[in-house]
Length: 456
Image (cartoon, rainbow, N blue to C red; front, side):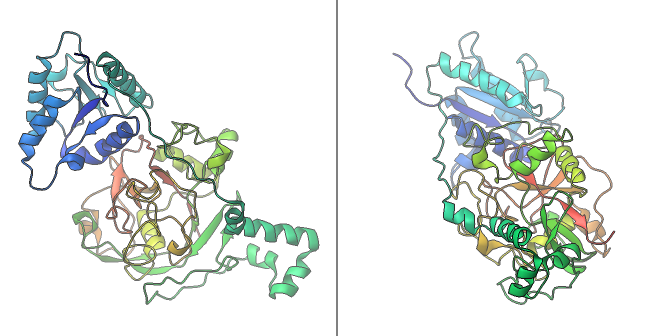
């Protein structure tokens, strides 16, 4: 009897400490039409975990064992490997059933050394895995297709209403008709405002409705590459939360004034750096739903993705700026009143692009006018994770919370990412949430924005 026409079933085996990287792999495989099995996604409350995992392994066409330095520690995943090895013995000779997939440089367990591995931490790693799975699907006559949601074009009216287009229109009027007309209309000189940014301390926000600068406020600033930034004034703010252990204890941090990008770095802005010969192009041109994402004019004002930490850092230096520190990022996101999200305490798809169900991919920057932070900064919850300057250390707050000037660890293995993404949960989109990623890895859900000292 011929095999049924169904998606290829792939079981993902991993250590608990690698759940974020493996969840990203799960999402990407699912996008490519694979019926991937991941315990955090497939297990239901009340089910017998061990029984369901054994069943899933035996029903899978392929088992991908995600390896890291933590994987070799004793744990239930070793039972999964043994079960996979036992099941592999039942497969026809030459069948691809077990694929060791290294998430980082690490030793391959002795029991898996006879299976050729794939290095997912290398730029071509996923494509190599993809080819292997496609071959497996063809042998088993299973389906393999990519589902792409329709892209709804932005209307001309909504584009004209975008604050960036309004700012450009005002600049054109001034250039064509002279600064005196603008002064008569507003009572201010646009040239004086742009050349002399004022460092005005903003009082703490007392309600859940943030105080937001208007589009021509003196705190708006354009850097050397004419990228718009917002002023975050000097002063203290409350950092951390009681939600997760690495966010504790809640503590007071005192920061100097700084500027931060109002928007996440876009494909078009990053392409300017690439075209100048300074930046490397993104490691992949696609997004979750679009094969031509980076260079397409349709996505020029969408956040750039598939850039690692060093690539983000080089771009910011090209702009005579830098990546924000972890503390700067959190203050710019939540203000001074300990709110959970930049706009208040609750989140839904009218405020942010998160949780897969909102858009299923990145969205145009600045899409949520009602979700700006107290300093007028967009998209600090959802859309894409954002690289920051700091190394990640889980207990850093606990050790250094009494120091008022947060500096971050001097060394580490992973860099901090902040803000959640289009596929992350509401918990990950909280302003105090901390996550991390290996600095040489990139992702279709990680981008960045830049910062700059307000005083030389």
